[in-house]
Image (cartoon, rainbow, N blue to C red; front, side, top):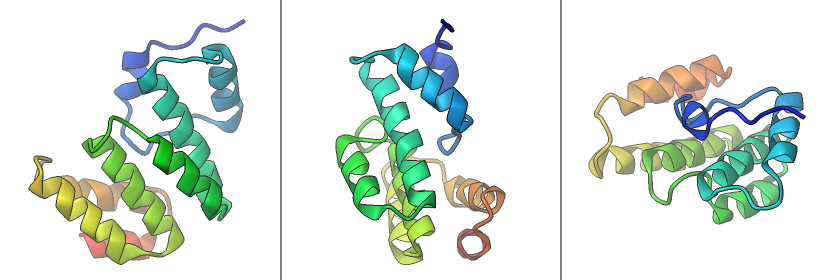
Length: 130
């Protein structure tokens, strides 16, 4: 059995980071049935990201409703915005990122978000946030 990396190490990753599918499955298995809330949110994010990439939007919606980070945090908001980018709804993504900046995130967030979108191959989204 593998040891889980410390939760702090997982949370130190950028908000859009996810492990390989094999590592995600191992981490989910090692976390057990009742992981701490922050770890449960990370596990849901990884599943939501995979579902979004596969265009399984009902699954994405259910996972997002359960929470993809601390409620209303920048981490969760960026994840929701990215899922909207994957779905093609750049206007909603832009709204979420702007809302995050208005409620306390760094004004550099849109540029960081553009970089994350570019890294993930979402050129139109990256251009919109530059």
